[in-house]
Structure formats: C-alpha cells, structure tokens
Image (cartoon, rainbow, N blue to C red; front, side, top):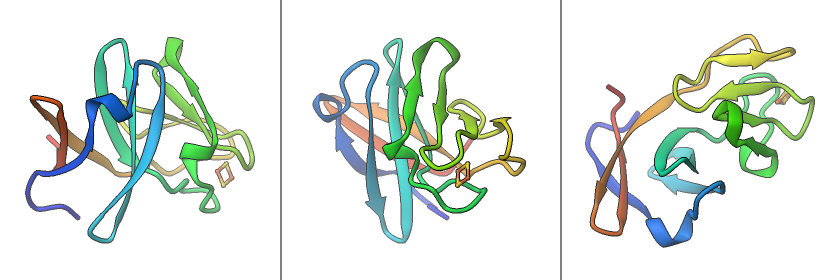
Length: 107
Ligand code: FES
C-alpha cells in the first residue's frame, strides 16, 4: 500500500494507448494511458497472478485483458470486467507533474 505519491515513470515512457509495468516499493503497478488520461492499477491479476502488462489494452473500454485466461479489469476502478476474474485489483492515485507520472494512494 502506497502512503504517499512517488514518481513511477515519465509520460514519454507511456505514450497514448500503451501501458507499462513499474515496481514502486513492494507494489507491482500497471500504468496505462487512454485518451490522454493516466491510470494505475495492480499489475498482478487477481485470478491467478497473470502479469497484466503482458496482456492487451482495450482503449475503447478503458480496460486491460489478462494474458493468461482473458479476464479483464476496468482501468478506472480495478473492477473485473469479464470471467474468470471476480475480485477487483488495487487502484492507485495518479498525479502528473511536468513529464513525471506519480502514483500514490487511491482517491
Ligand atoms: S490469471 Fe488473469 S485471468 Fe487468469
């Protein structure tokens, strides 16, 4: 659990329509850019631990699909969007400072 905002990546590392994984402390985080907005959720699927950054970003739904069993998560809420995923993944707050993407506590 992040207790404060820390720099996780540069905007230039996450172009529109892409995603990347970063490790911040003990947290494995997925950062994605959709329609100019940045989202950060856990990079580890709640089903069986698939690495979400290895999956597919569906811009039109603001959703990431897990590479292992095609479950999906809403990037805005961390809520599962398709079976077999049933448990939400953690979300993180995102702040932009210049070219830096900061992640921190949600909300
Ligand atoms: S591990 Fe992600 S859908 Fe199964």
